[in-house]
Image (cartoon, rainbow, N blue to C red; front, side, top):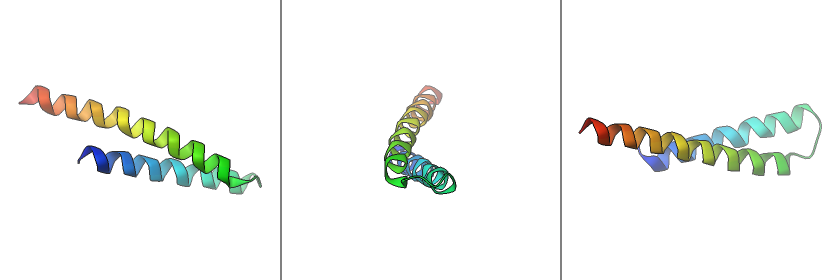
Amino acid sequence: MTEKTLVSTFTLIGSLASYYYGKTHEKDVVPYVMIGGFIGAWVGEIISKAVIKKDDEEK
């Protein structure tokens, strides 16, 4: 997987998870989706860097 795909996937997962959290607790979902998307992108960046570093070491 490419870095762009990993980051996009984790951003989507974070956004949807936080949307679900906001809806189930009957709160305004917009702040939760923004924070969840940010955290998801951050996690995606960390994981993609680890995968790319591992791929570079194997070469």
